[in-house]
Image (tube, rainbow, N blue to C red; front, top):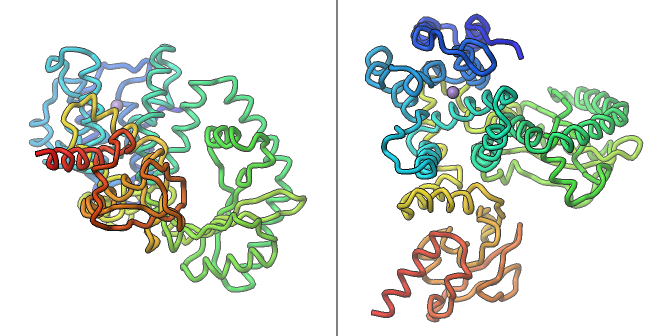
Length: 481
Ligand code: MN
């Protein structure tokens, strides 16, 4: 891998921000001076790492303070610079961001595990203080994973597992698909090199075999859209080898995966999306049940797009994703996609968006409030936020994100305390279900309220989420008194 230079970084920043180069240069000089003499395991000077991290941030069009914090992110942990120094030399925000990514002092802990749990909690909850901390951490982790070959095998496995359990799900929750995809493949490579290499080759062969067919499709659709005066950009979309590997557990053969070949069509306006969809379907026959409208109903991480899988030429199935250019930016960078538009205000705007739009955020806050012990916190967050989720509809069509295995009462408490407390029975897809019923993706749940108290009959082990458990326990205790 090429060593990152300050010049390359500055050129990247100049693509979207010409006027704050001086301040960023100051941060570079400061970091460079304090990391002087330190070397990475790869043999490169240490400063190459913060430079590479900041380059990743600049690719997301990060604001000035985030870029400075990227350059300075390791000075407090690895040199004698203090947060006060940063506050004095730069500003409060830069100091706060660096503080967020700095690990806690060893001397405060009795064991390595205790320290790790505390640091994991600090990392995860940093998003409630300033989402930019997580984004710097993701960039940091991405560069560390890219250069993992220089670490011992033990470290490789340890870092890969942590990335898989914490960082990839976080990237997914904030919709940062570009980072997520790259992390997935790096983790998969380090955890299972043989399978990774074999599958990558198979996927490449398959895509090559289908190349004429997909190229022809791009050509036909470009012409068709142009003839109908729709401005468009059509590209092939690459999936991570890891996600294909996961699909294979379900589908067995590569040929059976309906979205192994994938095109994205980016247009200017929402109405163009639906018009383009019509054009795609008029040229290629859609596969039944594979149409999804994530424009009207965004994913819980704010991803928006139309999805349709069609029969392309030569019988290849091709998933076609249609979205506006704005949606495409969010689909690529997630939460950070907003940076571009809002520059200076990015920090507070992102925080507002997290609060209003991203469902995992509220869950995280609830767990943070309800669980005091760090070890338990990490466990609960892994199970209820970062692990596999299911998506359930309310009767008005809202999508509720819940951990796998959730019951209707978990659903009710997730919507709101009152719903949980007053529920007396549940209907799922129109049928009454027992209280221990395990919900499945895309079901519709209706909460029936009534005088019969659910907490008298429910076995607490039959519910999954910490929030529901906590309140059911409270209710039960009050009744006994
Ligand atoms: Mn670092």
